[in-house]
Image 1 (cartoon, rainbow, N blue to C red):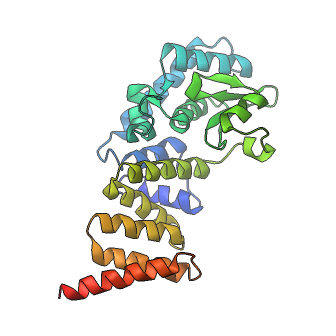
Image 2 (tube, rainbow, N blue to C red; image 1 turned 180 degrees about the horizontal axis):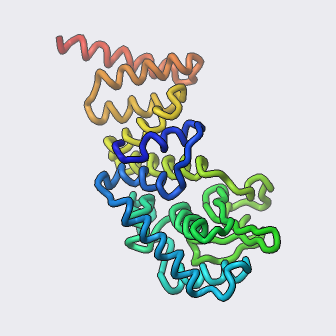
Length: 272
């Protein structure tokens, strides 16, 4: 990745100190799909939405009024909505495109809500439910769970259980998550989408980013090997599979990976 905040994104993923905000981190992820995106224009669009909410709010210091105004503006007036028709389109994971199309998946729509709220000094954090992502507003006097994918609907505990498709939900699952968690979840979504679409080149970009942040993560090396094989970069794939076994010597699939390594080594030797 070559964006201006690329190094800061790696620091964030690695858990190292960094000042990168969620919007900038999300835009660095979007560069996998849109390398030439105009980050300044996207930031200005988020600023514009925040200003529009401030203009419409009767009393921004009132939490309930902020939530009502933000949801009315973002989902009724501006028209942000969940993209049910083309859920696994990579555009849904790209903040720039979500702002352009007003359509996305739960986590990117939540990022819009979180970042607009941050510009207005409102405490909105992401909540990573199993299989769904929402936001929580909390100013001590007023708190609410909000579902950006479903038009900013306010949620109670039963609603959260239904969204997570469980009968009961752990309190820990309802706690706000930090920026690193949000960004990691966005990347994992993209990784799954690219493998689903057999876009090995872009899956490799995601994996390279994850490995740069956590080089000791064995599974990423194995997946990197699979992506490199799809791209016919056989020698690099061999190295990736070897790294996987070095990092995970007790891997359950060790025998299968060793067989893959032998096959690759034999093929490479035959090319000399």
